[in-house]
Image (cartoon, rainbow, N blue to C red; front, side, top):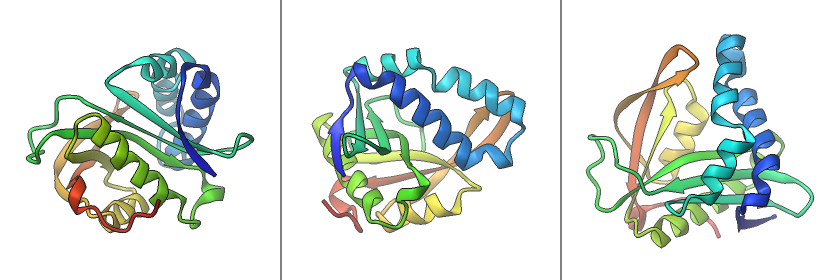
Length: 177
């Protein structure tokens, strides 16, 4: 598996993968109509093309030229008020397909995320993660992220609570390259 930068030609494949992995991860805990609404607005090909073309956003794709195993996106954007670290960059998305869990690939992808954030001038990474996703929260904690607050996340009309986590890139732990 290699990690590479996403390009606009990846938009259709990434749209399908992003929607499928989001639904696989959160579908059972959400109303199907709300999930369908969210997927339609957040993960369509047009949305992925905009993100892949945005100079303030870097999309990283983990694949082996045949199989897409995961992806992550980082972007320079105004941080939430609870983010206090210097030069913050947001981890917008971080997904690894279930068949690839437990192989050390998430650590490799997070190391690449840190590198991409540095390219964007970042010194601090921050993200939000659903409070009912203990596996992801534990992974981020292993990487050195700490909890700094909460924010709302909407799945259709359903307001959910996300934990907001941050880490200074120089203090990240548990990564492999």
